[in-house]
Image (cartoon, rainbow, N blue to C red; front, top):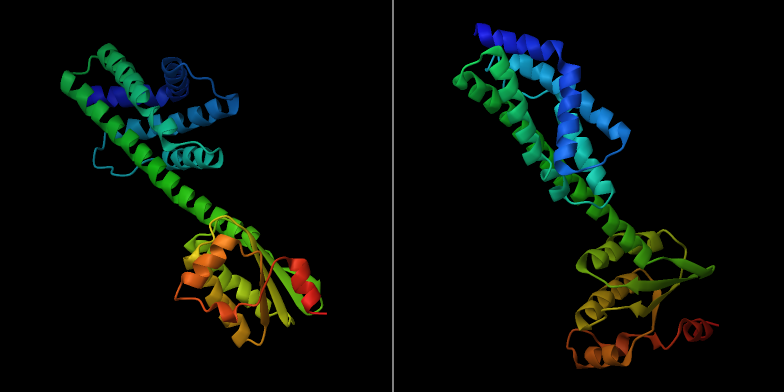
Length: 273
């Protein structure tokens, strides 16, 4: 314990210089260049990590990690998500970091006369902290990626079904892009609600901009149209391609006679005069 106390004191007195040595050694091993602000952020994290380790080697009952390590791990994940990076770009830094710690602490242990068992104990403790950091990074990356994906889906769904008023009682909905079940549900949940709040009598649904319009999607739009009609709104459909018309006609799920279809939005508007 006396020798471990000496190791603890050494870390406590040299945290700043050791932290900078660790950051520099990891960057050299990876042949990596990062901005100065990111280096300083890493140094600050390692200063707290080393301070925490100096206490941990004297009290192995500690089962937490320093707040700076958790925060740094989450920030790494956030930067990767915002830049469109992958979790592997962070994960590859951990093996050289472990190697740097192993080499550094083995050298310090030798200088201070620690036994092999004491050195193994120290390495075990730092490995535990690095494992916590890696786990926190992965968990944060997955959570933030899911949030970003959901936000992107909502934005794409909103942009794929804009509502464009053209007259006091007429709106045009130009449906754009490739439609998934998520986007169709968005229209059912949000677009219909928004239209219900508007004082309109006619909705012109232009389907010419849909990339993947098949009979299943046509069936879903038919259900949406039926909902609007029950609300007292007349629905006019434009932009049906020939192959889609054939699929709808051959399908048992959509009644073609109930579809008020026009070739273009212009023709649909002219029919309302």
